Image (tube, rainbow, N blue to C red; front, top):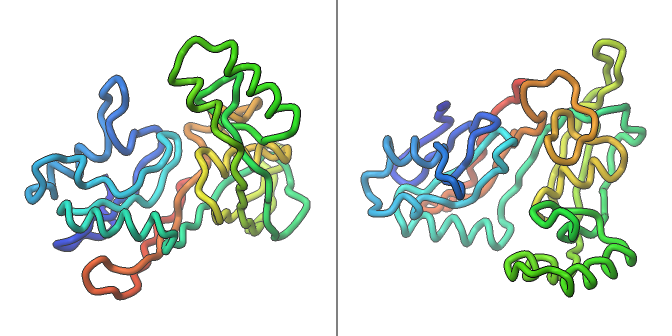
Length: 235
């Protein structure tokens, strides 16, 4: 595990792709276990180190607190959206616009409840019917949630070809922080993230999904000074 930074308050790591940030339902190995083993001497429960997380398939910068008090402070900073998060992604196809903002509302996919989809009047009506038909209370609760506004700023970094296929390297900044937001926004426009196991119908020979949390900027929980952490993607 690559340690990007650590002090007495926080630990910042570069998470590899296809590794859980925190334990899953079936208790697979995760980054939190590794961080806790090395830096968790001041917490009784390793869950007290969790500030935020990345999707399992996403690589990049993750920050942990080293005490419960620091973790709570950092959670508040994230909750109040006083954090700048920048991602890099490799998209299928040549994206036609150099920079801008994707503004498409998201809702839970009523056909596949763990996943998300773009919200339309038709999809909202279908979700209402799905709630009536579902027997599992947990899925009902998720699907019943109203669609949420979702915005992603983007900037094209490069357009290229690999084995004759077009690709776009993109910088993505989530203005809002919805589940799978970057992945769904790119796929909905017809330029899915390469290797996305959920939202990409065509997966080239990539070992992992090409979405990477490249930069995290916020204030230090103790000093209040601005801090910036960066890690380059492997794709």
